[in-house]
Each structure stands twice: as structure tokens, then as C-alpha cells.
Length: 192
Image (cartoon, rainbow, N blue to C red; front, side):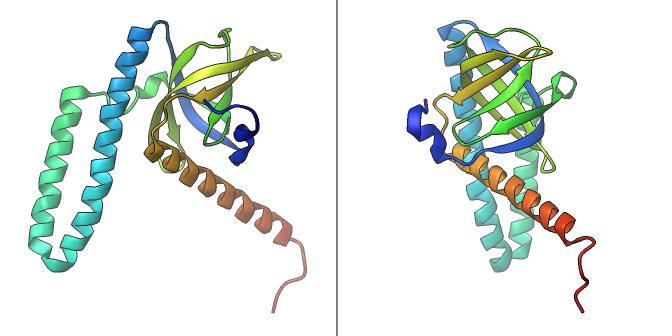
């Protein structure tokens, strides 16, 4: 958990995502989700390594590269058919504005959630469509006009996932800078 001065080490961005959360009521459900997330993270790391090796293989032997790619796609489809848990149910996701950093996220909810409670959050980032799941601990729950604002810290977030978050945050930040430059560049003197 990130506390005190450490919380401000990470850049925060406002973003719009598809999100859902599930309350984890006991240590057994937390342990079960941690095991599932650990397996998911290991698969993601293997996929990243495999992608690198496939790109190297493409230069050496295009035919073997193609066969390896087909086998990887077949394996991925087989795993998806067995688990059907690779991505959250689209119908359960809700468009949500969040405040995101590598240490946690804040978002609005309709129901009260007590401080200290653990949640499983499923997030889909736009425009990449990248799915991200993590366990968070609620550090604050403030009343808003329509509900509650939850502030959460990521709990036991693997470094690989923290790096994914940082990459996404940098993408959002770069997009905002380009948008601001585009807006401030309009109406000004044209460059010849």
C-alpha cells in the first residue's frame, strides 16, 4: 500500500474507462482472486516474451514464424474457451471517469463502501481496449451529490502491471498535451 509522501511520487491523470468492481468480503475470496490474477499476470508476461521472440523469428525464418504464430493463436483460443475469464463481461462494465496513478485510482460509485474494504476492479482502457484487473483497498469514501467517491490503493500489484499502468498514464498524458497544442494552435497566426 502506498501512503504518505510516497503517494505523490506518481503522476495522476483523469481518464474515462469501462469499469466494474466486485466486493471481496473475506480473506478466502481475496486469496482466490490473487491466485487468479497471479496466473493471469504470468500468462501476460509469457505473451510479452513470446511476442519478442516471434519478432526475432520472423527475420530468421518467415515460415516457422507463421507456424509458431498459428500455434500461439490456437493455444490462446483454447485457453479462452476453457476459462472465459480473460475479459470481464462487457454488459457488467460501466463507462466511468477515474483519477488514475500507478499507486491507485479514484472513482464514483452508487453504493457506500467502507474504508479498508477490498475490491476486485476490472478496467478496460480506451482506445487500446486493454484489460486490467487488480485488487484495491478502499482508503477513503466521500459522499458526493449522487453517491460516493472511492479512493483506493492497489494491493500487491506486480511490477509488470504497474509498468502497464505507467505506460497507459503516459499515453493519456501525451494525448492531452497534443489536444491542448491543437486547441491553442487554432486561430493563431498560420505558419508559412
